[in-house]
Image (cartoon, rainbow, N blue to C red):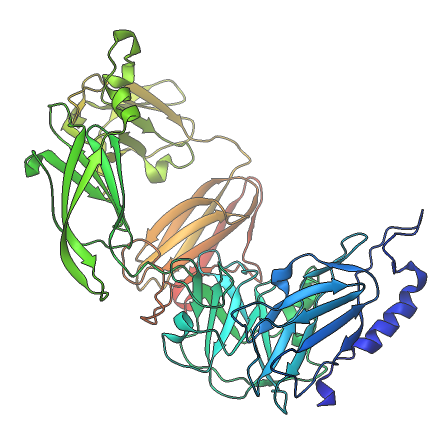
Length: 596
């Protein structure tokens, strides 16, 4: 068993010789001396690591440091297997005393990880962490597993996720009980669960909102490995994966062996019911559902015919907008009746008729019933809309026309489109009008002509071209657009091959926080990404398996992973360097990229 005991005492002695008097050993920094940058270290542990026969009741572990320290983050002191009550830690001089609120399990190997919980008193230098192993039985288990936890959407590493092993293979175990063994991920999303038995496990990860080491689908994100796993690696003093790494040591952290990759996602709620109702205007409201894909059999509003009610779901079908198409003043209380499939006490979807009283907020009512003429604003008497176009996206997205309320009269033929070339010669052209399939108030307008650099383009909406459900007519407006002419801008052409199904392609900036372009791809073709500034970009591609043009999340009980998402690699990097004034061609083989 001695071969599993880390040489912490020897390391402490070496450190004391190396740093000499430069290491702060008191609560006061040396007057006029250099700033203390040396983290604290352990000089003694009682009992020593690897202790067997540890008492299940009343046990205590003492860590003695070379200087006075504080417990900065108690939650970073992590016990595996975790208990209902967290270990209790307190300082006594230079000693950290750890006791256990709950009784320990008999014949069980435990690890107590100090992580980054401890800092010194002087400069708050962080103790790099230490994993202490002990057993309430006669032996220390000797296997370990490693892996990485990533966010399913950004593929960025997730710090502080709780990774859990279960010997209970039932799907319900992660919802009901604490794991057999657990660990927390570091800054790189990396984890190692050491000193475990050689047997079969279920492997999960959660972002544990309430730190109870039990999966709560309403609060936590989750990840899982599809099949049972068995440890393949044995603990030894020389194993690099068991060492504590400086998180700024990029090379060292990346070289650690990662056996499993888990992608963290948020499950859709399993229970279906109406959770919210809002009256946004006298003739407008919305209701929201707990879960996606709400199933409505019928819907009506008291006192109105079916053809006077306009409704629209969002793409996830968990929020429904509702409007009244009627000239009469709207009632203070709107009586909405929704016949939908609601989850009953047994967890089964059953038809339910729900009567929802939607009372108009006094402030909303005041806003729409102005008693004095001087209070009436122009937008209170017109059909309100916006007409927008972005110079660098108009070729892909066209002009976007969006109304505040649904329209009941339209005269799109009255819209006019003209353009002026660099010689100031004017031309006109016809328009293609497309209503957004996901938003009945939104229209995409595209001219038939191809946009060209150096031309000015004008789209005009004349007076009284549209009328909304309030009976108001639209004003006139004209939008001018000119393609970017900055000679420093570049264009990226990406030829996609192997498109045997539907994919969603995103161009993102270097921080991966801003989607610059989005394409839906279901056949081999070349996509153009024009007007790019000098910088680093990445391309994210999602496998849209069910062809619904959105990236679907996973389901733990259905054993369904979130739809696969991949970042294109350009050489060894996931970033593509775009220089100034360049035209760049790339080829992406989707079949190869998404190969298992």
